[in-house]
Image 1 (cartoon, one colour):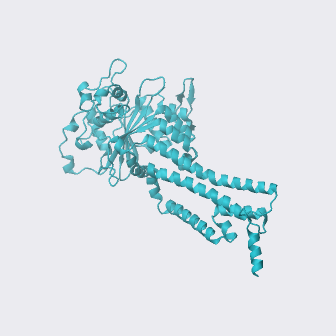
Image 2 (cartoon, helix red, strand yellow):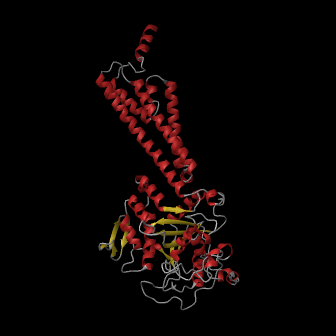
Length: 507
């Protein structure tokens, strides 16, 4: 009996670790595939219970961790997705798991491979295992690569709070404020142009509890505004007038003027002077805090749209496109990058103010259509385009809270638009007091103010054009004076209240 047992054991294992037990190549490959799907199957089938049990336990533990993360702790994944240190560890873990998985597949075939195979059968078996290893390795390698690319884009666009000189309290990321105000800028830097002109300037004021958002838009050709107190105000005590005939003193010139004149923004580094001065200037015009900015290069914006596979919009009237007489025809259209750029920038047969409305509708369409599937299938292109196109002073530490807030905005929050354009506001001779009154009303509480609140004296700071109220939030002012709404022209009817983007954008 013992002699038979010894014989079976001798036949069960060859010197190279392969199995001499009957079963053939087909069985070995089938069990190798099973081992790739559930680690340890091959070892258990060949009597290696300890090794097989350990591999299966490790596999089930990893599967349990992943399943738990995507079910119980799914909200926390958003926080990890915007933490560069966590992303680095995830990328390393993916590489390690991939290597272990490939090793398990190879070893599983080794312990299952029948002895005495012909050269052709050995080649066939090795080839099948190589394909299986490749099938296992590619998803893990792609995931690790994508995680690394994402981390690189994240750290390139968003700096740490220490680099920006801002400390973020993760327990109170909004610093006790009811709203966070982000300046959204569209710049037109290009090879054939000097500097950056910010032709699109919108403050997105977001309620930190509900996600309800008001878009406060200022026209690029606004004039006679005050620069913030300090060296900038000292140089232009009666309002910004530009620097010569090429810069007549429009709002879209402030960014580049600051970059070219560092003395009016002392202590601020190059490429940060423009945003800092423009933020402070727009804070003064609106009479409210401007916390952060995001600058989108409009020509790089086309790359983002192309990486998404295009954007669907409804066009209500023909829009001239390009320099060769092409036209974006009315109807439901899926625009490529350059077409979307022209849709958002064209002023032919329209004007700045119609264009501002189209830009907000385009922003809304992109936000709605940037689904996870689109992002995953074009990840590398989107990350590369974002690095070329976006710049901001939002610190990395704020990203988890910002992601949570953006989820509220996307999941049914009210998004309203309040443009300060003619005939409501004359760009050549603006009523800054009216702008501040309407801005305060647009972002204020929806409930009617109490008598004591409405009777409160107005802050002296908020009565001066170009100066925000103490603490960055203006106190409520009287409603607009009769007669300030101007004409009732359909294209530019005076808008004294925010209007829902859902209602104002074609759909």
